[in-house]
Length: 140
Image (tube, rainbow, N blue to C red; front, side):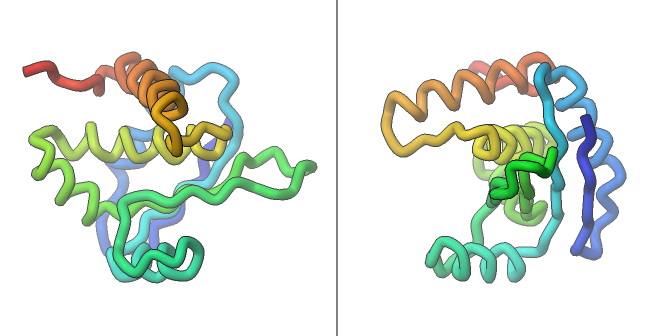
């Protein structure tokens, strides 16, 4: 299927788009979705408005409510936050962006992590996709 990308930042996202397309080439049963790159301020506002959380976050997913539309929904990714987290977690920016895109996609597919059981299932699904894209976790 297809991913539509929208860049609402001043960053060059060409390589990020290539990265994300390569990740989802390997996903079976893939549906259409939109990915929007936003600034820290923009994701902060979205987080506050839609989740009532007054701080920036890394990724937000908004599933499509319209059943007739082939799109799963929208994913908003903050590349600044991804860069910060990649440094904090000691892995590559590509791994972090890939993780955020896959995490957002799985939320659109109905996965969640409110309970330990749900979290385990979601983590396994994320790692399976990222490993196929050669972005799996590095074991220390």
